[in-house]
Image 1 (cartoon, one colour):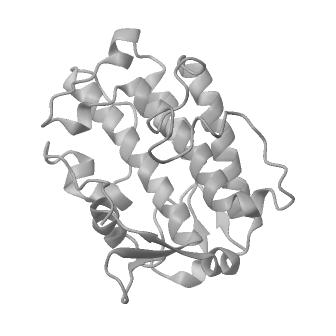
Image 2 (image 1 turned 180 degrees about the horizontal axis):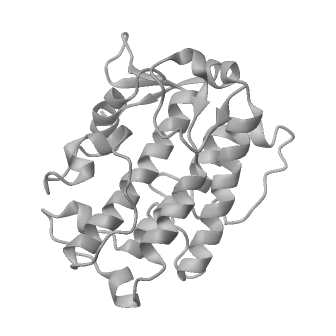
Length: 238
């Protein structure tokens, strides 16, 4: 069985462990970093072209993490969670779909979900889905669920942090081949990077951070920990 453990925050080198992320830490860390922020602090951002990491405010970072927890899980693991097709609708899926026709840019509907408490409620729901997947599905199922997508410079950059589960195709170097085990670790690391960005925004404002984040996954890369203010690799398709 795949399983979670509060101490599992990085993909084990040993594939026999079958360990999966402890997703509940994400909610705890987001709450710890943001619940004491004022509205001005929550909404501070800088849209300068050379400060891409500051384009999204702390509030927007929370909204994106919540969006990711819902959209990713439905899209990548919905067939395991709802095999009969009875997909719940906590948000309007059409409005929030990925791609050029999405109404919202990788965040939740700001007209409906603006207050932090509402964003956290959606995040908790998405985290519960992720937890259900890794607690109920055998690791063999996660590893056998393999997909191929057109890669991006960002994906090529970050998959090097995984010991397995995602790789560049030998047949076409523009394609990324990844299994569900790798995908579930990638979304965990993705969420971590946005929590770290919240911390970086707070530090920029002269505020103290609340959590000693583990430097695992994508956070071992200089662009996402904050060792450089340079823009990281982009999401344009290869």
